[in-house]
Length: 438
Ligand code: ASP
Image (cartoon, rainbow, N blue to C red; front, side, top):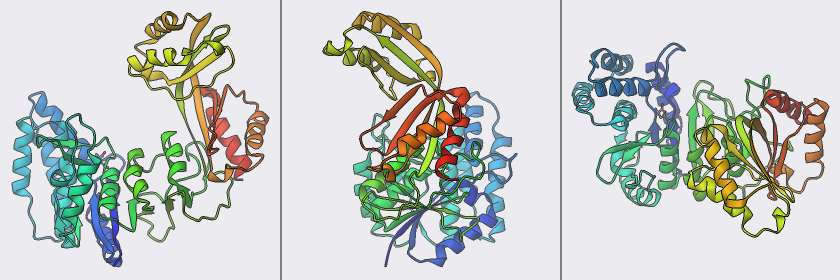
């Protein structure tokens, strides 16, 4: 028997009708053994996600305000799912315990996690699966980071005793037993952790879209679906803004070599996107796999004659950023110039401090900080050792009348990153897409 770990997002569990589809999917293939649910998502555009309602209850309680109306809406959501499924199952005791805990300040993460917890209880009852509380098997370290090895060890042991089980997404526990959540959208990470621990053959992530698109549909009209993408490509694309999957969810399965399949709960026959390890044999019809990008970057430009012969120059500049806890994104440099690309919001409180401290550290001839840069990443495994891709990218951008302010290509040749003015961002993405895909 194979083992498939499955995660359903909030839109796939928004109401009883979606729970029924989820059951069909689960029973269509009995290898789907471990399932990770999100909290119920929005039913319609003006509706709220259950997780947001729990955050609201926590905020009201923190301010000493009444949470009854907000909490009743949450109860209604679950009760209508239970009724719609015709289950002989009651969450009244759970509701009382959770409400009391929120009123007694059990913490924001506790409140937020209850959406997945209750979703998990209902789903386990509906499917006839065992319920494993994520707090018992997913651990965080005292500093708040995820404890991957301890979790994997314990979860693997526990799963051995359960042929079919539901493990709620999004949360785990701290060493002192309190609940801690991952960042928003973190059920994707739980799914990946469960896939690794169960040594699954694949990790299916069911959502409300067909998969990853080659470009953002808000920028490019009807972009094509990516059928196969490697983990490395996906890291590049997700980091630069391609949504669908939580960026951190790639790591647990990547190291275990488990493919992720993105599937659409509302269109089950759609092929979806498969995310595979680099070693997989694949057929690449397309030179580039996708184009992603983001606005909101700033360039710190430093000039100094003979910079190239000054040992430790870069380190001293980067130490200033490190001491302020600022990550840098790219580091294009010339003989006597060095540019550091950073996220504009990250430096907003430190602009003058950064300039002063860099001046003190390396005595530059000039230093400036310029905002308004957008980065565009052209990503594709087929670019490796393939001639002419960069030429095509630059020609397309030049033909569209766009000035390129920065270029970065790692020697892995997986991506070419262009820096353009924010006002040229959308035009740049379209120019490259049209050149390679249309
Ligand atoms: N329910 C959580 C959120 O809304 C986690 C998730 O759905 O993945 O962020």
